[in-house]
Image (cartoon, rainbow, N blue to C red; front, top):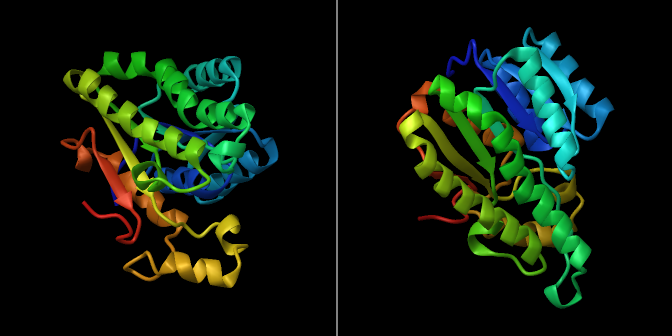
Length: 248
């Protein structure tokens, strides 16, 4: 397991799913975790889970749709821990609809939460990473951002945008020893997937050579690797965690 002792990780969308798994995995490797999300109760439950396992974490309530909350929560984390070494931009939403019926508000909400929030949160912690000449920025994108999906034009655009942001920042920050990478999950076992009709789920699995859904822990392990010194010569990369659904 990578050693992240002495590192501080800020994880957005940490109250559930992949964000929760990332918080737990990073803490297990020794990182102090600043867990950020909207749902205070769920967020505190994750912090308590980390603490029971012997790790260190603190909750920083934050709605990434709010510029002011991003700034305030990021400042609170920096004030509390003195630095942020690792940023995991994970917070995201989906509001699916065919484009011809999609409301402008649903387009704007998805782009604001999934893409603009990553830009804003990165800005808040970037100065410290550059000064200390060490940092890890990891953006959680999606296979949908790589190959598209009917009914998810807003989601696909936001996740594709994260890939472009990742590569641009990798070029900007490489000279300061700050790496910027993305993790692109495929079909991951979530309550939303679990609630799909059996036939629909079966059709999805036909697209996956490994023949199964992924787990949030498998995504978190990829994030933990990219956050470590073991990945020190990897930047501008999109690490696919999709069971072979998309190759190349």
